[in-house]
Image 1 (cartoon, rainbow, N blue to C red):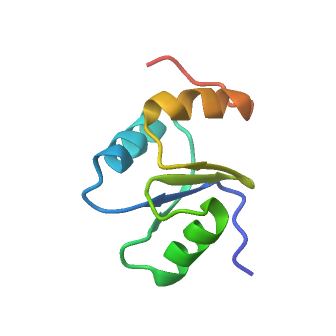
Image 2: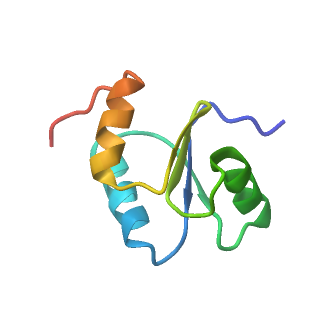
Length: 88
C-alpha cells in the first residue's frame, strides 16, 4: 500500500517554476512528496490523469489539483486549503 498522507508535487528537472515552488515549500516548511515525471512514467501518467495536462509543476493536495503554476498561484491555493504560511 503506497498511499501517502503527504501532498504530491509533480516536477520536471530544469523547470524554473518547479525550482521556485520547491524552494517556497521548503522555506515555509510545507511537507510534500516529490515525483519526477521526467524519469517516472507512472508518475507522469498519474499527473496527466489528475490534471488533464502534462505541464509541471502540478500539485495534488489531497485530491485538490493545482496544475502548471508558480508561487503567485500557489499561495492563494494553499490558503484555500487552510494552510498557514509562516512569514520568512
